[in-house]
Image (cartoon, rainbow, N blue to C red; front, top):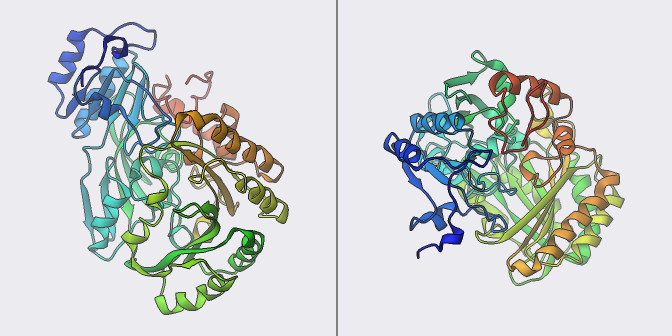
Length: 472
């Protein structure tokens, strides 16, 4: 369908100056991938991301076919001072993968994956999803610790830390990166690892998209094939009891068990308290370990069973559908106290949308045994993160759902540690971003000043270069 002229935007510099059409044509002529602009037949589809609450209209979308295309796009945008967004999976809830009038570097065509079963490593291009990685590694009886939604992009997840079903046994996703291939703000291609650019290697493990465009990752993989996992749902009125028993049980749980507690609704709208679990060790031992969690009360549903790990990764995919509107908040708690549990249950019981949920994620285990300053991810000593995921469909319901999420977040502040999960951050202030990194923040600003002194990569949870004022 043709786009009416008032909708068409053109590529602009940050100052608002239009970029010449001849320049854009020259860019496309030296580009191996494809481009998309306002007025073209596929533009409306191309500009959309997973969160329907985000409605941005870039002036140019560059679907890169390889790292050379990324270099070409970065140089083009830098030379013309164009606002630049970077998109891999497009699942960043804050919508920083797109922008108005500027340029989007889209990595979704770059999905190559190479598994080395002998050395248990996996090289993954930045456009791959978690599901892509799972499919490739599972053929070799391996898995990379990633997240919990198979449609998510591997790049954004990793750069923000990456928490999933294997976190307690094998750590965060960023803990399992051996090296990054990066295109810097100067258009240089470098590799960052323990022995090459170690400062950048440190910063990329949790520092988000602040330091360059990562085009590929080399991961450590682990021998994981079949796990014992699934969902148990109890009546909502059992929530106080289930949460307290979950807390007590997990204090002595083995690293092989990752378990999250949630206040949500079933597909037919019944409010429940649920436990989502994954045991990545011996299945028979897992049955023994999980028995207490499966008998806390009379369950409405118990779907725990042995499953291939890629199926475990798809467990909650239906809870995050494309086309829904999303607004998320989160905070790490000092402890999962009875008072904090009461606050969460009270707010969950008056949620405006049955698509919304309150999720308590327990970390610890291997992730908690890494020092707070060894990587950028600074929440090592904090076990419980609360995710507040407001979801709805109709635009008219936006205000009430956003208000609900904000009110719950505010009500949890007396119990908050003052630390936050990067991949859950939305509209948060600069001070919240700084608190997220804790003692690592100053060092991060110094790394930023070295690799991106002009804050070219600013459309993210931004870390300004040391010695400069914040500019997003």
